[in-house]
Every structure is written in structure tokens, then in C-alpha cells.
Image (tube, rainbow, N blue to C red; front, side):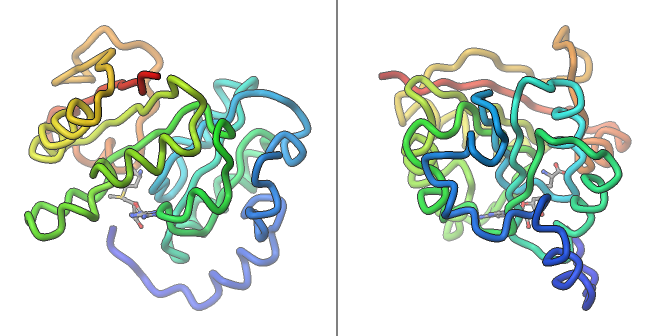
Amino acid sequence: MRLRHKPWAKEKIEEHPQYVIPNPEYYHGRWNELFENNNPVHIEVGTGKGRFVTEMARANPDVNYIGIELQESVIVSALDRLIEAELSNVKLLHTNGEDLRTFFAKGDVDRVYLNFSDPWPKKRHEKRRLTFESFLKLYEDVLVDEGEIHFKTDNRGLFEYSLGSFSRYGMLLQYVSLDLHNSEFAGNIMTEYEEKFSAKGQPIYRCEVKYQS
Ligand code: SAM
């Protein structure tokens, strides 16, 4: 993600605590208080400019969405979307996905979305990939039993690596597409990166995997 410095971003984020939750640790084990319902919670780690979580929230009012993004200058664009959308079932966390356990208790999360995660192609950076074993353990620690990860990417190397990583972890592969946009999968919501890469003619890879108890 190309970053443009936005000196006003921090202040804007702080001005909208109803959208970018300033104290997510408070909701550990009680996200239903924030959303004021007991609907399932789906999170996207590395949400970028937030189109996916916003449009998923609009399409699925009975699901609560949380987009997690590390970069201040990027999450502020997601905030703009949320302000415009005026939806009560989508929130943002300006934080590192590595800290999920601080914000979520076991069972707080019903599904994890990983969309166009940074590929970190060098072997020495394997541990940074969001589908590396330590991340799979992290997601398992906050997901419900038999919770799911839905993953899509344009990067064939990352996709192949991730299928191996899911499989080594003992996860169940439920769905795989090597060309999502020419598949029968219905209701796909394109992310910003997905639109960019598919416009260049690149196939989009997608899978759904499930933890086994
Ligand atoms: N999901 C969006 C999309 O498909 O358009 C953005 C994809 S972009 C390539 C990856 C995003 O993940 C970047 O905005 C980056 O800052 C964010 N990211 C990477 N590692 C992260 C982490 N550990 N926690 C939170 N966000 C992270």
C-alpha cells in the first residue's frame, strides 16, 4: 500500500470514536455491548481502505464487522467510508493484528477475513505472512470452535503457501477457487486491491478453511 503522509489523520480518527474504537481492550469478551446485539462478529485483518467491511456490513445487517488496520494514513480512508455509510454494524480498530488476543476473548470472533494480505515473498520474512502458523494460532485463540478463515489474494505464491500452512495446521479446506471472478461464487464483494489487480487481468484466488476441534 503506497502511503501518503496525512498529518490530519490522527486528529480525524480521534474525533470519531464511534467508528474507530479507541479502547478495544474494554470490549474483550463483550463486543455485544458495543454492537448492542448478539449477532456474529466477523473481522478483517489488514482492512486497508475499508470497502470490503463496509459493503459486507451493508449487505449483511445481521453480522457485525470489524476492520483492523495498522496504518493511520490508510484507516482514515476507511473512516471516511464509514462516516458516509452510517451503518451501526461496522467498526474499525487502528491496531496491529498481532495483538488480537488483547481485544478478543476465545469465541468473540465468528470469522476471520484476510484479503490481499501483504505477500512477504522472501523466505526470511515468512513469519510476517498473515497465514503463518503463529497467526493461525492467534486466530484460533479468538475464534469460536470450528471458526473459519476466508482468504483471497492475487498472489499465487502466497496462496499456495497459505494452502500448505492451513493444511499443516490441520484445518479443513472447504472451498477453493483459482479464478474467483469466473467461478460460480455469488455475492463477492471486491476489495480495493481486488479491483486493481483484476482490472489488470490477474486471476483472484480464494479459499475458505475451518478449524477442527
Ligand atoms: N484488504 C485490503 C484490500 O484488499 O484492498 C488491503 C490490502 S493491503 C495489500 C494490506 C493491508 O494490510 C495494508 O493496509 C497493511 O497496512 C495492512 N496490514 C498488514 N499487516 C497488518 C497487521 N499485522 N495488522 C493490521 N493491518 C495490517
